[in-house]
Image (cartoon, rainbow, N blue to C red; front, side, top):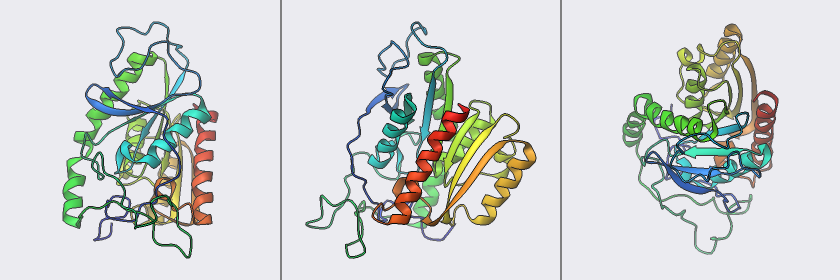
Length: 295
């Protein structure tokens, strides 16, 4: 980890805002604000209001749901919402994206991106354009480390567990849950797989996970990992070590590295750069196919 907060976790860093309007809605699940993107065919006859139904009547017991765990900017970041909408559409299932940071995300709720004057409607950049918009905030390595410690597993695991409980109560005990995680969220997809909550996961430039967590992914666990060529949080050495552990433990896995990309490309990538746009699109499509094949 570099001394300076990584752009993926630093709200003062440039952050391209993708074009699009999110179609999901935010509800409260056991006090946790959660973005829900609906598949084209609902998985339950119950209207999702944020309050778990008393039973599972009317629920198709074989349906699947995707638990979407974000990078440090949380479910309020429009790019994350657009990704959740796309997974829901392509997989024809509901996507549940909680605020796993419980209000402590790196972009404060309600923040608006700062666009240079005259560029409010231009979310992408070209070689001749100005840098992409960014969020106004002060950040230091010390503040980042303090934030990071405040959202470690002892705090975050129970939050996710409450959302998983809601999924089972809403969609039925036999619902198939797949996990997709970006950066910070990637670690928690790995942890959920290791604890037996889910069997199929997709992680994009996952951050801060340990080899001990990866070692819990054995036979029957299926993990796809999409990584950046340049990544000081997931350097090549750690990625290769992760692949070695997955092989040794007998997991089914896939690992793809995209040249010309940096950490965060699949959720904060500048789509005005061809290599980044193609990498982001490929990572998404391959993630969809992974769920279609295994979930």
